[in-house]
Length: 121
Image 1 (cartoon, helix red, strand yellow):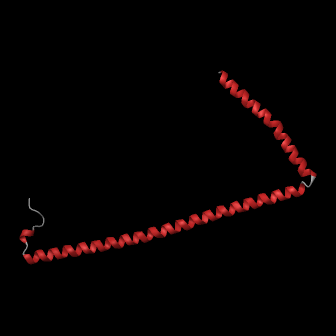
Image 2 (image 1 turned 90 degrees about the vertical axis):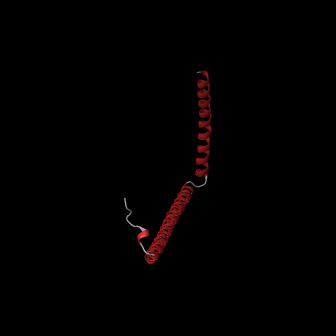
Image 3 (image 1 turned 180 degrees about the vertical axis):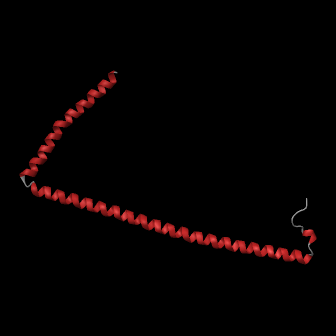
């Protein structure tokens, strides 16, 4: 089987010319590859900046929503305080505290009963 290209059949001049063409082709391919890699790096950097910009926008929107929610909550609390003035506000707090004090012992008793029940089984 004979190779497609045989260096031995070429003269010294033809060999030099062939090597020169191969070297030029290698340099050309390398330049194309470096140019392509540089372009890809630019595109990657651009995408990263766009994504960062989008993320900062989302973060800013979430912060704005949180601020609005807190302001709304404070506004509601102020309105509630205006409605429940003086004795009404104190009475409401006492009722809430009394209800909590009545429910808490019942809750702890239930927890103890459950614990004993599980322990007996």
